[in-house]
Length: 526
Image: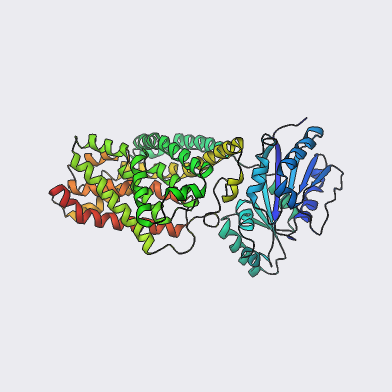
């Protein structure tokens, strides 16, 4: 009888990295003697696995069987589990096989409800890693990017160890690294409980409430409008979360159900036609800036050219039907204002995209792995090998959950920061309509960045500034704000490198300023 879910621990690493030796060290600890273990080996190295306490059974599958008879392997594992009591499963993964094949195997209908991967340990040889990374395709980087911590051997000096850490953390930022001699620390790390995203979210809510109750009396003494900040924060979240959820669902559909080839066929190879498709897609999707960023990440991961994907991300929150409708009502049915916002948004988005075509980004664009390989839920390019409906749906749910909590935490931080600015700054600025247009435009764009409003409702706030700012300068607020603000920067940082995000911010600000400054008076004034 199977007691579900069974925790699964995976050891990865290149050939002769010490995977079997690690199994011997970990599973022959005294603390492991009372558990019934199943060890599944997909690779046989020089060392053999031996169980000191005779509480481990071993199943061996060669690489050829994994590639040609995965269904039989799944059935054999299930048959064993039905006949034996098993408390843990340990998998020694093949060094040259993409990690996605293990995911596909565990999502097989026979093993779908088997359990979940608790920890992935990557074994590495400090002397060999740099040479291997350039010769092993995506398999080794995938394993490193997907691991919870790394165990290294053959460290000769502190200098070598520091170089090794830089290599590893360029693929998996912030990952913990141990040396093989730290057996007790490694064992403790293996069984340290991982905080699930939902649990972390609930803990964060309780901490926020506790801090609020403690801090309110102190802040009120300093005349800080705490309740106003909280109300604004909750308003931003209530506006943003539904659109973020829509974006996450669309992003997950793109990531799981649409193949790279199919997506590339949707976007023509010619840059001009690709940008036109991006503009049309943004025009049709009723989503705000919070939703466009997860979709943007999925497009980049699937191989859509950066200029086209950037055009889509910057245009969508400015020109979609919900934004046009809200602008129409906010400005009393003034179609000229609506049309101006849409056309300026399109022009700015195309110019921003073209800047990335003329001057391509140097270095990696995506963070947390090699460009185009790693997805933050553990989905890889080879995940397209998962063809069953149950497997696809399971991956879709996992991707949606991971994407929502991964981006959501940055939205939460950005919303709180912007609520503070929204409460405090609007009282500090007051520029009359007679002020210099360039200065008022810069101030309005700065306000849009700091206030971080949802693009589906920012037109109402822009209209409220009409008595303090020139009407023309509000176009900077309406065009730049949806493209780039505090919460968008934080959400982008969850999946893209700092260099790329920084460049995108500078280019977007510069292009929006120049477009609005040069064109808006011609349209509105004319």
